[in-house]
Image (cartoon, rainbow, N blue to C red; front, top):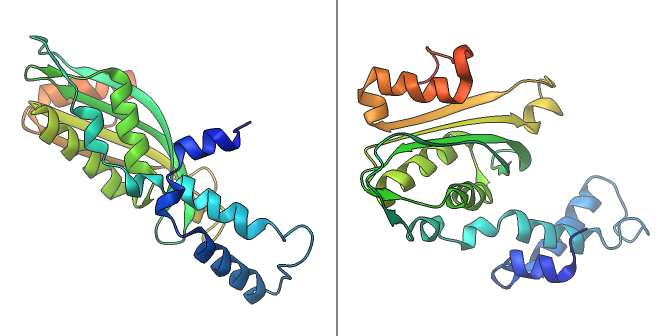
Length: 208
């Protein structure tokens, strides 16, 4: 269970207008026909305000800082971290989407700690977001900060705006990709990264 101290350490609530969120949540409850003074809802506006501060803490972080500390290595083969779990909030309906990201890059003399790639995903995902932009942003960050020869980012996610409302299609998965540099220019390099991610069942037509 997350303690209040843990929350304070992870969510920059000082940068978020919590009382304003609380007032807005109260208005939403009234608008849908609820009583915000009902026992079960009395503390809900405060809880939601703190939740939004946590979910959107990426708005107050610079993901580049996780890539600024690197190591000089002659290694020039693919570095891949698969199945980086994440959760984010779709900016269209303010409903969560969650899944996993696969990040691969071809170093050009710079490598970073593997956990830093996961931290970049975490920072970028914790803001109002669309999956397409999230995927592109992560790839651009790696290209710019590591001066990599190539970067491939593939994100797979389930969107609750599709599974619990609208078309109501549980089980659907959205896959997005951003392929830069050598992975885009060299078909064999691109095929190698896809095989490392998906094995022999790798997609071919959908990853561009």
